[in-house]
Length: 428
Image (tube, rainbow, N blue to C red; front, side):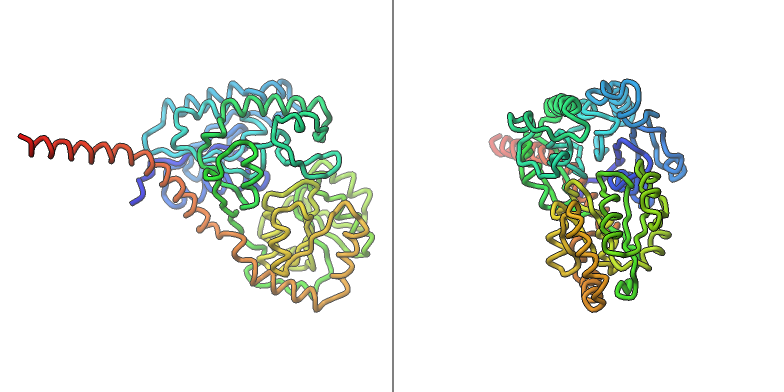
């Protein structure tokens, strides 16, 4: 029988669901609370009031993301305030059956959070939403060229690679941070790491994380629609994500224009105003709640996910596929082989505008192919994701395993003690 969980502590840079990883962290806190668990959240930003309203005990630093604020670079190496917050919480609230789940730390909390969590490491689980556990730039990619990186972090080859999107000075800062992180994280004795795709395992193992400590756990996905979107009847290209270079919104716009297809973009970001001026024919919907995105998706023929760097999962791709939308995504997305094999996707380098536009044009001209892909997406990709309830059950199983492992030595000691007492009694 699983050991009873006293409290679940969710730790993340942000308490607001601003992106995929934060949405999962915050969403898990809400769902655990709905199931009746005592839940606490430790975050680097100003706490979202919705958490307290849901009965979640939230503690936050009230800090902004590292880049762009005074002292951000130093805090990024070692955020003393974050370490104090976590240590104080543990001192005041920890119990032997409290479990800890670390999601994101690279934007505010910094590597100091690993040191602060050392006293409860035996009850800690870590989610790998990206590659920051194993790579200084978090992506195993040379951002200057778009090429995947084959190097081990902090190796000579890694140090010589000019891979950072902000230049070599920032690369050196990332290297310093990773060195600090490796020292306090101690990957060779890592707590369980929950990787959002099985293909992450060899990449995470480059950091010295034992393969046995890496557990694939697909993301929970709520489809854009519970009934199949008849994509073959539609004409619009759909992009959902941050409007910035890393997500390739500009690449989607260029390809759609070249293919002569209408495009709608859902999301916001630093490049939105510039791209809206450059592409007046495109529709920019801004950031929308899930139900509104689903309504727009009903008018889409294809979803594009043209990220410039490897997507460890690609939540939006699965939200679309499970609703019956064909997906075009880059070969560097770990989901690409899965969706292509299911007949639900096309893999193309989004930097190759001609090839990207050709893929869009081929779908625009072939209703039968789009319908076949739509039906395959709706029926043959279910194994690539979990429902929110399945995901929560899997998390609870991992938490329970951590607590059971702690109980085992004490149970073994009790059994040994009983045998010794019996033996002594028999000898007497």
